[in-house]
Length: 120
Image 1 (cartoon, rainbow, N blue to C red):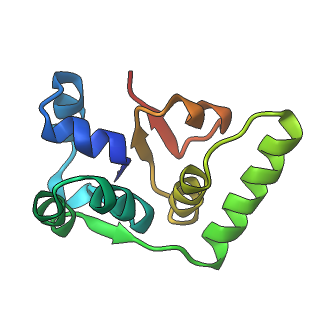
Image 2 (image 1 turned 180 degrees about the vertical axis):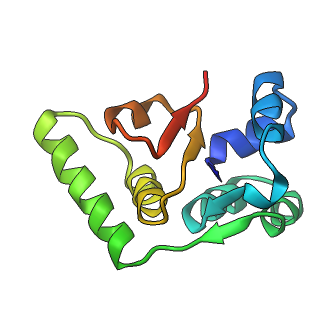
Image 3 (image 1 turned 45 degrees about the vertical axis):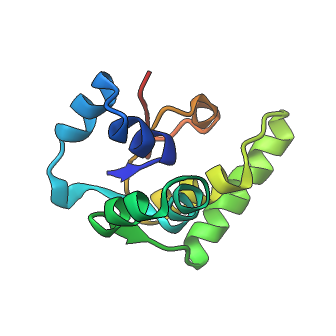
């Protein structure tokens, strides 16, 4: 399970539904991406975020994830819906690694995929 930035932050502040969701997985099954790492480190207490990230498996981009993200961009563009480049890269990494993204970001609904789980 790949934790999106918003899920990690909501977990840290103790949002009940997020804490329950994250705690339903084994700690060894939790991961995030280098994009989420960047988002977390740029906007928050660096020490706290470094401690959190240290306990997660970290996925990086590769050729397949870049191709998946670019294809998703083209499909969204042709449908008139868009996602941020960061979200497209995260999506590509999840698909390329056959992982499920746990997110609160409803724009991921534009990509109907078994690789995304949106929590309300």
